[in-house]
Image 1 (tube, rainbow, N blue to C red):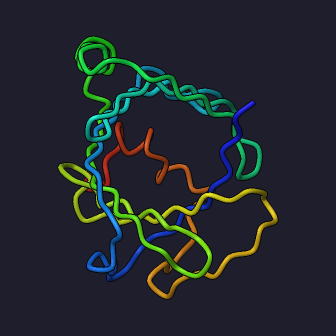
Image 2 (image 1 turned 90 degrees about the vertical axis):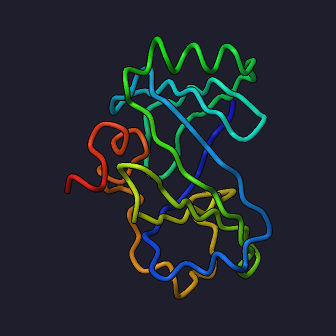
Length: 154
């Protein structure tokens, strides 16, 4: 069973120049509600169909299935109905962890969020000074909700 445990933070003055690498991401949502998410993701030259289960605390079931580029394109066109976000993910090391800073584009431009993946809900970590507010449980910051209620409309 695959379990995702992550915490999310708003970012002010992101130190993108410290990125160890960055990737372009486009993802669309076939199903996006509070209990389940089915997402199509294009991450550079990798393509996935992802199923996420109901969130409990900061944990949720998550399964990634590799798919072809053609399948990813067709699923986004025919099943996502404009529920798509685009972002650049920057990977930065801080303390003992790799942080992922998402720089959102298009209707979500201006929004920067950082995620840290943990091994357990109680794992301790050092919060960088650029991570200004935790938004892990604030639903409007979920990627699936940014696809239907973009940051620029708030």
